[in-house]
Length: 624
View (tube, rainbow, N blue to C red):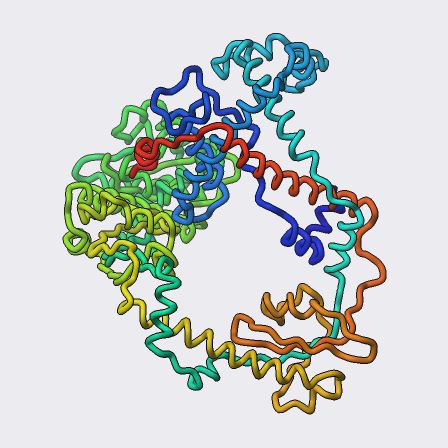
């Protein structure tokens, strides 16, 4: 399989998949079983039903799976998500009933055999463990009979699925032909005729416009639009207060907690209080510097009860010093065992500390990490301020404030988008989550400000107004659009006429230089070239050239018309795939053809079993 994966990453593999893969049936193997049928139905499928809670659970589960793969949650299209989940649940219900009708079932003996082979239920010796099996059931709140029922149902579905998907036939000869197509190459010359160069030669009459309008009236519809006012809050733009020493200290303590580092320094202190505390502290520090014993001086001079025992206060604990912790931390920084600090003014008085023991693991000093800690403190403040601001704006939106009032009160820039579209939206707020909120029925009706919508790293609030629903365009409104369509069509026809005249005059390579237009020599290309548009690529290999000649082909393309001249098509003599890889590729193709057959079979089942969707419950479940 590794070779197959490598193949699928290569250019012939990618092209093969693009050409052959069809959308897979979204049935999954997860169970969506409920203990009882939910009376709030989403859909009735034959004799079965899809319950509201079952549907919501499936939506939530699928949403979580998708969001794990998305960096930006606003890119999730909730409408498509709900449609896919509902289709999957209905498809499953159809297949379950058909499997029962066809008598596809699995015996208890078969289920027992499968459970005995399941590694999750085996003990250390590889034997089936009743204890582990019982624990599994308790975790899921199930009985053995319920588990067997789910297994039986799922295995019956697997049987039916295999009987449909496994019947697809795609012969090896066809696989080889398909792969060989991707290995074709030829020398190509190209000239493009741009339709815009012909538009001045085109005239559009009122009769032309009326005729087009009458024939295409149903497709000429306006786009649902609103005028959108919005504010956008980004953490990067949040102004924060200056970082304090306390903020830095908190980040340093957080760093130590994250890394599991514990400060094991043992300290002794001398505390001096009263009117002359500073002078006394300086005098004692001078005596310590001359070599006098710290414990002796603590017994003689310390105003703290710990002085009686030589000043010992145990392990350094910053929380004991409250707001003075940062100052004490700085004074102790870098001290070795036996060294003392200078007198430190704290809320207790003047204190002198001595490090008596240090069993700490290696820890970077706070000063050495200062730049990093400042950055962390700034980011923490920014995120904290941002979260508070998001909460405040959400509260104002819920209280009915207008977006103008919110922007003014929170000092956030108010922006506007005129003619904000529901379909084909290319604005700066084209994310599905924003569009869904902007066109929510209740939001439009109340012209309310939405709750915050996460867009990348920022949050957006929108307020729609001037809603214009989709409707068929009048002839007067559609005239400009129709005129442009007809002008491009007629100009393209003129471009194609010239392209065919040029193509008709080319039989050999020498004829290419005799034409009134200049050709671009693309050299040798394959079907995967990016030098040609999609339509040009299909044209480039559509016809073989005779020996010692070229073939000149003309066709309408995305930009007007193109003339493509090609010499003889050649195929690499030796395939890039081994026989095993060809067999594996054939299996992939057959499986996906089988999935197509499964979709056809499901369409047939929709004719056999009546499917009714409760639109009201669907709208409620989707928050509409």
